[in-house]
Structure formats: C-alpha cells, structure tokens
Image 1 (tube, rainbow, N blue to C red):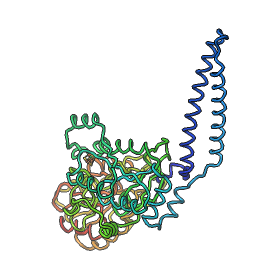
Image 2 (tube, rainbow, N blue to C red):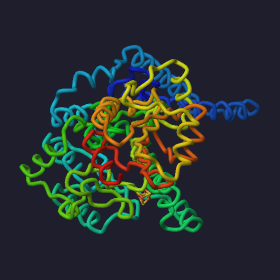
Image 3 (cartoon, rainbow, N blue to C red):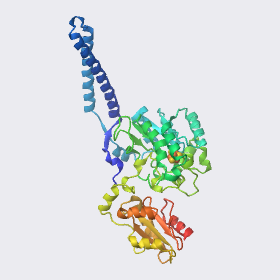
Image 4 (cartoon, rainbow, N blue to C red):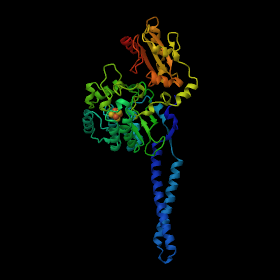
Length: 463
Ligand code: SF4
C-alpha cells in the first residue's frame, strides 16, 4: 500500500531544525524589518538629496548599523541551515515501535516543548493526559467543542481540568458555517447524507486551525479501535493530512503513543492510576463523540460500531484522521484503477465459491423465489480489506459447502462499480450481501467483523 504519508519525504526536519527554522523565520522577519527601515531611510535620503543641508547624520549611522545587523543575522541563518539535522520519522517510528506509551510521550514532549499539544476527545484518551502528567513535563491539551457533545462530556472536561490543574484549549466551529449548514439542511442532515459535511464544519476545520499553531500533536488513536481504518498507524509519523505552523506538506508531526496498546490495557492503566473517566462509559459507551452520532455498544460489539452506525464501516473516520484511509481503499479513488491494471491477483479462488458474472448476479437479483439463499461478497482484488477477509470467506464457503447456502463473489470495481453502487448497495469494499430464498432485495451485512463466526451468525439469523 502506498501510504499517504509516503507521499511526503521520509525525512523532515527535527525539532532543533524546526526550532532553528522558526528562529530563522524570526531572523528573516528582523531582516525584513531592517530592510524596510533601510528602504525608508533611502527614501528619506532621496528626499534629502535635494536638501543636503538638512541631511541627518544620526539617521545615516543608524541605517549603517541596521545593515550591519542584518548582515550578521543573515550569516547566522545560513550557518544554521548548513548544520541542520534531519529526523527520519519513519525510522524513529520503527525504533519506538516497542517503546512504552510513557517513553513515547516523554520523547514527544521533550522534542516539541510547547509547540505540541494533546488532542483530547473526552473519552479514554484521558490516558494521554495521565502519561503526559507522569513525565513531569509541561504539556498542552486541546479539545474540539462541536456544540453537539453529551452533557456528560462537558462535565467531564471540567473534572479533568480540575484533576490535573490544567486549562483545556477548546476549539469551536465557525459560527457562520454552522449557521449556514443548519439553516440549509437542518440539525440532523448527517443521518441523511452522511456525517462528513457536518464533521468538516464542526470538527475538521476547527482542528485545522488548532494544528496551524503547532508543530506536532498527540492523538489517542489505537490500532485495535478500527481494523478497517486504524490497523496501520505508527507511533509517530509525518501527518499525512494536516499542516503545522510552517505550513505545507510535512510541517506537522503526529504522535500516537498508544497505537500499540489495546483497549483493555488502557482501562487497566486508568483504573490503576485512579484517573477520572467519562460517566458515559458506565452506560455502555466505549468510543465517545457527538451525542447524535455515538451510541452504546453491546458486549462483544466492536467499539467503532457505536459511531455513525448508519454508514459503511470503512467510512468511519470523521476527517480528523482521514490519512488513515488510503486512496487505494477509496471506492471513488483514482488509485483503484491503477491497481486494477497492475494485475493484482484475484481473490477467493476456490471451488467452494461461485464466481458470478454480471448476468449471473443480475439473474440472482431478478429471482423472486430462490432454491437456496446466497451470500455474495462484492470485492476488488486490490482492496486491503478484501484481502484481509480472504481466508475467513474461503473458510466460510468450505464450511457451507454441501449445505443449502451458496457462497459467491462478484468483482465490483472498474466498469462494474456504478452498477454495484446503484443496484447492490455498494458503499465500500468489501460489501457482503445475503440473498434470502424469498426476499427481493439483498440484505447487507452491517458489521466490519468479518470472521467466520460473525458471518455465520448473520447468515443463520436471516436465511
Ligand atoms: Fe456532526 Fe455527528 Fe460529526 Fe459531530 S460527529 S460533527 S454531530 S456529524
């Protein structure tokens, strides 16, 4: 997978370089000020040239000293640039892969000082604050107040501020943008046309503003939170989506100190350290976001199933970590066709799985009464999630072989994509459908759990 991060140079300046660049920028500003003063003085000289008797020698001396000052700072800047160090964050991520969250946090805070901040959502990512607190270093915390959070979350913010004696830097959406969205589409448009527009206004843009004032940020993303979108996150990376203080690609570093920690261990840590937690957790909430878009999950259900549950699993990033979604996994991404023509090997190649052609699946759709139920995966061979479910789907087909359930596949990328989107509820790959014996419309498998037992439970409950 060509990660979005790889689009940036593998190496970016270290903090010391960043710091020097910042200094250099300040020096640059000073040079500009000096040049501005100098050019103004020249203008004065031009004026005074016709009145030589009124020429002010002290002004000339000041100009000369300003030019000398400028020359010194320019030399310093050049020297600083010549000796700058470069940190390869991919290499650093590999080095820190087995480090503890505390170690990673300490490294992040030590490297970026007050130019880094923790992004706090009001959930178990409070662990980040506890780790930062344990380092003994000063740290900053910011949070996005979308205006749609649960009352419990607001109370919790207050509790955390008191517990750690900190002030959370709240970021708010632009009032005009919220007003225009709500006036044109209502308060709950996300249930109808997806969460992205609302998230963009209430979360992503405020986040973008917050990050523009930083050189690095710290998130509570964990690999186990979403097998679909978070399975690859490193402990530190050049942010693939957002820009920092200097602007431009590669100007922001993203630290994910708990990337490799699982949810259970986070909770043991919080309990051991007696960290206050959001009271919503005791009501069955695991992942916590905005009130209308978060719900409790049942025991055994994946935590991300409590977020935007009316949408496809793969799309469950609010935009804050959109770099997690690779272009090659995006149904509408151009990268898809590139991978298709590259000749990625086909998937699900076993006798137990029927390979449906377009007329084949059209016939299946037309039948009002089928001899047996059919489970069909709509897939694309280049899709990482389809590849990940290959063995479980093959196992499922082998288990069901000889039963009255047919297992099939339909390759739905390329030219077939518009048809699959329109007629077969394709949102993202893979989409799994169950054609029951009598139902005219297939039932879409709603979960991102694609192990054999979950798939069998779905089939047996509905066949
Ligand atoms: Fe809007 Fe829901 Fe996104 Fe919150 S989570 S910003 S309410 S769409």
